[in-house]
Amino acid sequence: MYRHLKEAWKRPAKSYVQDLMRQRVVAWRRQPAVNRVEKPTRLDRAHRLGYKAKKGIVVVRVRVRRGGAHKLRAVLGRRPKKMGVTKFTPAKSIQLIAEQRASKKFINLEVLNSYWVWQDGVNKWYEVIMVDPASPHIKADKDLNWVCRK
Image (cartoon, helix red, strand yellow):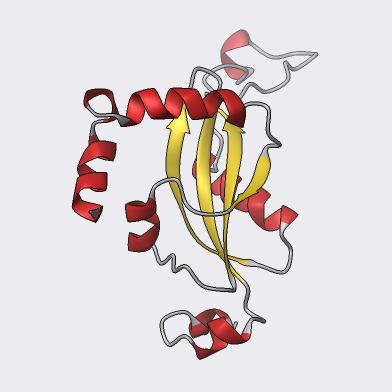
């Protein structure tokens, strides 16, 4: 099953994924920017990155803007070339920004990993896998208990 999911997500336009996601994104746009979800949208990708269906693991969908940033224009004494207004590349990736926003909203959870879900002309959506280090289920899990030792 995971192999078929992986192949479908590899080329969304040639599989059922594109039609399904276009319907879902209509509802996602009306949701808050950081939203907890019951289960991952891309189950195969989430499992590869450490997701397990157990207590103490939370999946959060984060909406982040697309495109490059613009800095404010300097008021005095610079050549246009040196203003650095356009073509400004931020030091953080959009995915890292999504992870930071999720960790800011859920303070007691640690970010395990994240993956791309979908994008449209304005936004990108990432799902962030978060772990509760205080949970006894996580403390007993040999794969995830390293989070508790931080």
